[in-house]
Image 1 (cartoon, rainbow, N blue to C red):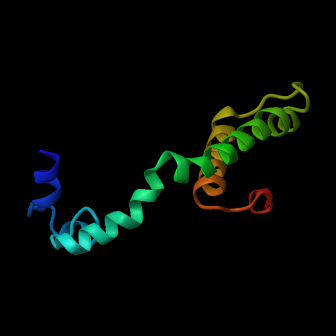
Image 2 (tube, rainbow, N blue to C red; image 1 turned 90 degrees about the vertical axis):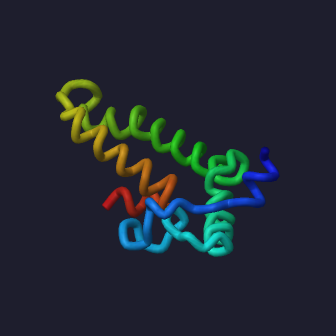
Image 3 (cartoon, rainbow, N blue to C red; image 1 turned 180 degrees about the horizontal axis):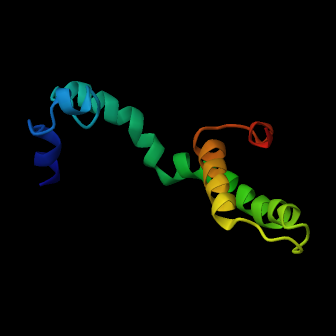
Length: 108
C-alpha cells in the first residue's frame, strides 16, 4: 500500500492554482510537488526543525515569566494587562523561534 501510494500520486483537481496559487497544496504537477515537499519536509522533522525551535521558545518563556513579568508588575505591586502581555509574548515566540529574529529586535 505504501509503495502504491508513493508511486501513484495523483493530485485532486478540487484545489486549483486559481484558489491557492501554485504551491505545495495546489500544484498538480507531481514532480513540482515532490520538489516543493522535499524543501518543506525538513521543517517538520523533530531532530532538525524542532531541535532549534524548542530551546529558543523555552528561553523566551523563561525570560517572559522570570524577568519581563516581574518588571511590568513592578515586583508584583502593579497589575498587568494579561491579554496584552500574552499577545506580545506569543508574537515574540513566533518572531524569535520561527522567524529567527534577535532579542534586540524584540526589545524595540
